[in-house]
Image (tube, rainbow, N blue to C red; front, top):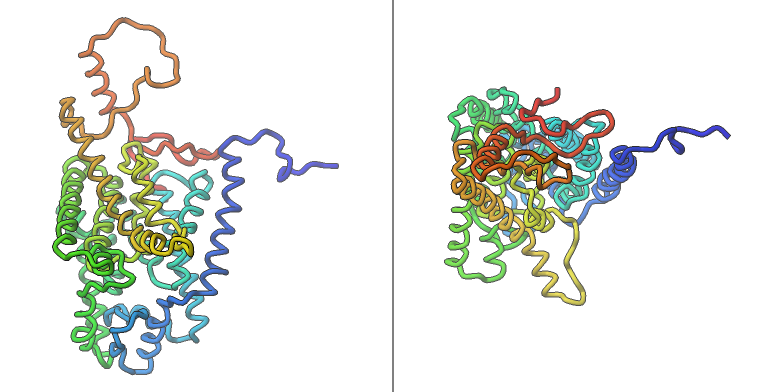
Length: 459
């Protein structure tokens, strides 16, 4: 009986090929399950219904911003410019519109994942591709974004487009995706601090101009535009005590004294300032590292320290977690992945046996996860700074030194005795010459360089 390459390969598979063969089916069926089963079925929480209702009312020339904001059901909170952008959703019936919206967000997440792969030097044929696809769609943030049918998948794509365009030097165009998201909701606005610190002004042209133009265009087209300022905007500044994983929301829900909440917010805010200072001082010339790490810090801080943070916002931390493939990544430590588990996992901790304990863990895990991530990033950067200063190598940066040959499994031929001074000089030279590129092995195709100092972004 003739053999087939599919079942009986002519040669033994490499580890990379075997991992790909296992991960691609798992990743693809996870995506299909999240989209075709969970998302289409939906849940009690429906973020899409108020959006569709507003889009339909836009075309019927009916009021949009008169809803009762005292209920716990999802409200329509987007400004007139965002309503104009989303208005095409109201041109078809609700079911088809929702399915198209789910598909658009799923495709946006997949494209964002591909762009992240290319940013870090990997391709679609690399081992990293199915692993990343599975990891994204296995999380709570992607799953509930699709199930609740909200816009966060498109927001993630806009964030990754911003980073990609900034890394490639297209600073003017980088402001476009940020401007489009700000027109709907300003969740990505904090990352504009990163180019601002480097006095890169071009992204601000579109980031500020687009929402201004869209709101100006939409204002006369919506019958009750002024109600957004009078009715909706004040609500957006309030910290609600339900479905809110921010510190103020968790504190209000569990009855924590407000002064104590402020003390914790201030302390964590100081860690954010410290991380940004160290990133700007020592990593601003490494655009990819600076933007991915900095955006993760700023966005996590906005979720945790702001007035509203919901667990499915955590999708926007994907670029920071993707830096794990870089040798100088701040998330190459196990506490960072404890934090990631807390705010990314789709596990439910509700328990019929331990009711209050399970409810408390489930209510606070995103809050603790975000806080732990901020502490880990600051601790790693501060430790690297103190170590580099003690070794007298701050001029060469604060990145960790590469492992010495004596610490590896590679046999080294004996040579002349070296003094402590020789060793220090050699390590310092190695640190300046060492690459910090991805070091996850690629597939047989050669995708995924094992350590290029300067990452060339794929086209």
